[in-house]
Length: 264
Image (cartoon, rainbow, N blue to C red):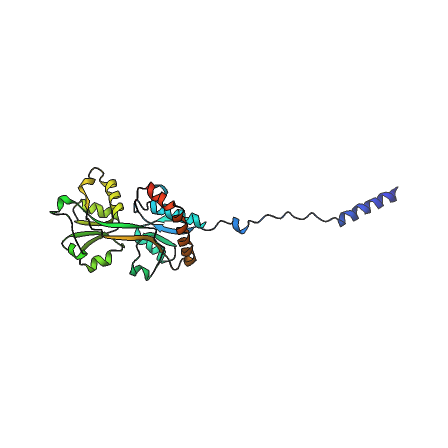
């Protein structure tokens, strides 16, 4: 009996020694497609109705940009700055692009540009009660007798200087319109929809006191101003332009502009 117990004991020890532990359960790893792609950084500023931190979907232009990046399948992050800072972030490669911008020869020396998103019209705003006659001009040099208000960093700084205009520059369109209202400038250069939006915001009961010169200051496409040092900026720009065409073809841009009451 004792010998049988000893044999049984040795059998158990042997079987235990030959048993292998079950394999560890592998922790599933996320697939490459499941890893969230980092957001592309875009800067912009206050320029209603095109872009604004206080507007739904950040304004018409920003909403179009969002639609394009959605078409690309790329997440995007918007950061609002004063315009000078917004451009500096792009120049330093901290942001892929800023918008909306007009392409100029000077800017092309440092930046790339997207294809046109849509065309905007610039005007000189004035207050007829302070002028003997409507503001009429053929060339910018014809306006040398006026005190002109402008915004730092905008495309017209060089042509205004070349035309010999006495220009008082401020940091925003809002301040520019305020100075016009207060009589500190005679003309305020502004994108037409932006200027009227600011007048409705600042002086809703006095909007009829403002007017615009019949001749347009400019009619130019608005684009993304793109960094040359942001990671993969060239490839991103190529994808953006391709997706922009797709969004246009699908009628998405027209739908967005219609909701904002913007005519093309």
